[in-house]
Length: 286
Image: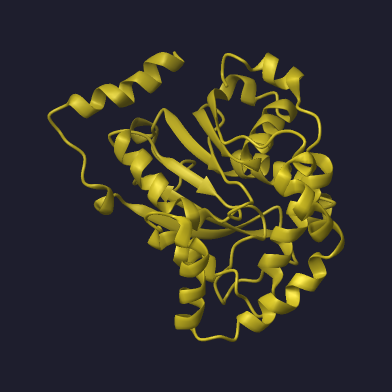
């Protein structure tokens, strides 16, 4: 069944009806509260609400991207990838990416947390690593039909989150057809070369980073854009979407940046041993 569904996407490329160019692919952006925290969602395709879509037009499969935090976990960094994947699938299946809780810059009319939502009280730490895992599970339960098949695409720490999701939610054993792990970060983060350098900073000194972010937020947009381009100068073709998304980190209240750094500090402490048991149990899907 999995092979049939995934294979159908590739076969569609050869059909006489060619898909539109990637620039013309429809991309819908929305900000919602999930577990009481502001969450950005990018949806590629005409299906904006799968729960309210008529069964005859409902797609059989959803591709959901779980971002990393090294970029950090903002959906905007995946705009080009989402469009390219949807285009490559001949526009047959929706491709979504959901940001990590509290990493996005919500609209002015929206607070970072929803004070009236009791869900945030039920989750002890929605902005921490394990809270982010429950955040993704809650998003699936509230936005995706239970009988819809899934392809989960994890990137970096998103791979760790993907494995934990499959471990914690038994219903995903049936619902998930494939779990694609891109550049997986699933073990011994603090022992890596970068981890040895960043762990002391993230775990003990991260509060000192808030002041530079706060001060940089007052710079003109042109100056901040030039700074981001300078940081990304190592990339052969800096993606314009990445540059725009990076500017959202320069916020006066520093809340988004603080949540990013907090989650990163937890990753260093909690991502230690590889979960070989979960990998073996889902080997045919990974």
